[in-house]
Length: 475
Image (cartoon, rainbow, N blue to C red; front, side, top):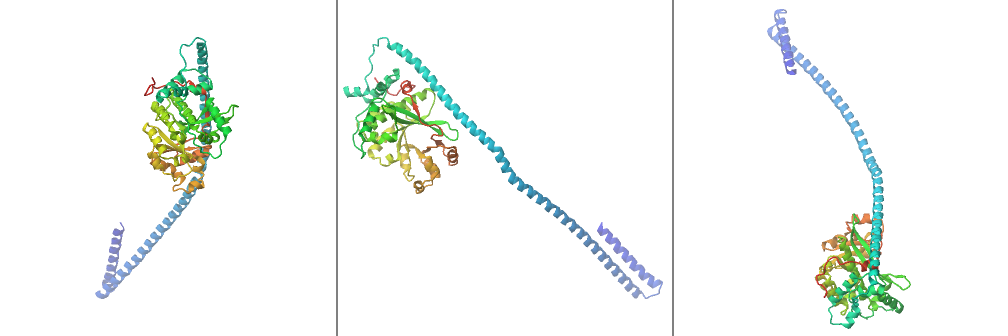
């Protein structure tokens, strides 16, 4: 359209210039050359004036467009400023609102967790009461039956069997002792100790303490002979579900006055006087009873059983110990033998040979009370160690002795996992510690936060049935 207008204007200018020349020639009688010059000059002048006017209009249009563009840009700048302000407000308000909304949920989750824990404890107490009632009814029936003459004679204790018939097979003695314990009702502590434990061999008398305590040694001996050896269980739970996956079996000795001897009080003296094999003997047999009782409830929870290195070294006791566990190797996948890191570090070829014999039967091992992360855990894994226990404070507080190791404590679990060893953090006593353990990808924990060690009643142990037949029956 603009091009057509320019052509029309150019045609009009040419017509005006031609008209001016014609007028000069015919009206004013001017020469033709002068007329042509004047006409051409008039045409150029009009063309120049038209070009200037057109250029001025274009400049005005461009200026107006630039002004409008600047106005639009200013509006866009204002909008962008408003958007930045809104985004800044959202960044500051959303986390605050999220915390305000999530904090009550966290509080409710903690309350629910506490309620679930209380409910679990209440169910456990109710189950215990039901078992007590059943045992009481069974006791009444037993007492009535005992009023009648008994034709069968009681089986002799394993100690008497060993004394009178030294050629009898040790596995048969262990199976006979278990059959006697499983079939009899409640009995006195001495009878329970004599009739429900695995065969006991001779005890080593190699002294290991520089400060013997004759009174404590006598107290330990009296507690063992009187059957005042109590079994305690502490659960090991999975995180974050807190489902019981394992139990740890702990022994306590009761004095004649009813006071309790903790392991830290009697272990060294019992080891010095050669009484640890007897204690381990009781612990092993009762641990198997617990596993059999758990099996009747369709529970596949494993059990950690602490052993002393002196038990592995005793050439008189360990063969009988080995025969007894071989007769009960159906529970090898659930029974884990545990040793402290200090004991493992000083084990000799004799202890490793005994461990190899147990590993051939399918039993696994655990190392606890770890204080040195520079230990060769790959070698332990090759010897059958599948679990390692580390104190929560040493893992979370990064104590100096662990800081000197070749690996950061937070990466210790990953290192063990590469060797096929599962890390269990014990002595967990706070919820904050659980959160830190979850951040470190720890999957098993033990401590008073979940449950303290609880005693197992002797009558429950004695009444434990045999859920599955052994691979080798006693004659």
